[in-house]
Image (cartoon, rainbow, N blue to C red; front, side):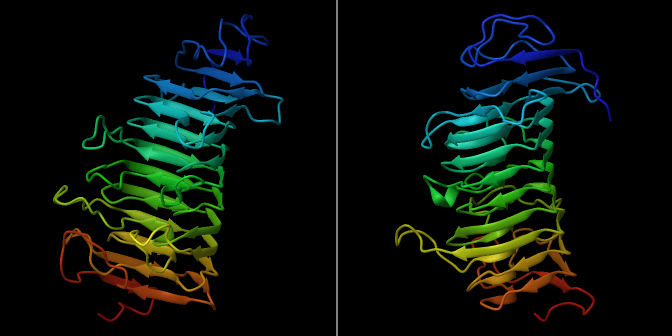
Length: 361
């Protein structure tokens, strides 16, 4: 669908004045913040290095999103950085709607890109590399003890390249991270993760946390990753913060047509850290379909691991269908070996494997 373009704003590193159209239109530099925007604006960044991009309370419309993108005619992506792997986020979207980020680069920061409490957001063709912790995070704004804003929803994360995450804290170095792990109840929903190339991450390539729902994971490549537990693609595993919401029956996770290649276990940094065999795809909640994926080479681990104790008694069915597995140095399908604290005792999974019927209890 073509977008209604209200104006074109060209932002140049260090620029101080310009006019609408080809040159800069406003008094703006990377350190003085963004120009005011209206629905339909296209903010174009010329090549260069910028301080972190912060988009707060910016709202487009369904037919007129606000677009932040690489300037046309340039092959080099504008680079956003906090200047340190230890802290800061290169690009942040908070409490905003109908926003598109296209062709930008996030690097040398604590987190690459964060979407918090926002809706109808599209992250496309971004390059996220050399990051201290997670590459892309979609969820709610929070403190250490409580959520401070609404969940994100209707977020598309498509055709991005994410590599070399977790350079400071490996266990938090997810490629794409949806929801919240340390605080129960982040019901971020309707997130599409499609066509991304995720490489050399030091935790889960894609990690979708419990309490999220309506998540599509399709056509992604996750390659050459490492971790000391969980899977290259991990969904709904281990809501440890109990008690949380009594139920999250929505779930509805579809993991389809992805390729996982060369995901390896590494020793934990200390003896106090949890450790378990890794897997290519790990499913910790029902109402999930795992279909048409290719899992290739998970040494010492399982190609697909299904948990057998789910936190929601009314959402326990997982279907595994038409997946291609080549894992001569590991195992194929494993059930229940890594069940973790789900606030429920007793195996309750209902598992189906292709056309051959339910798996044995």
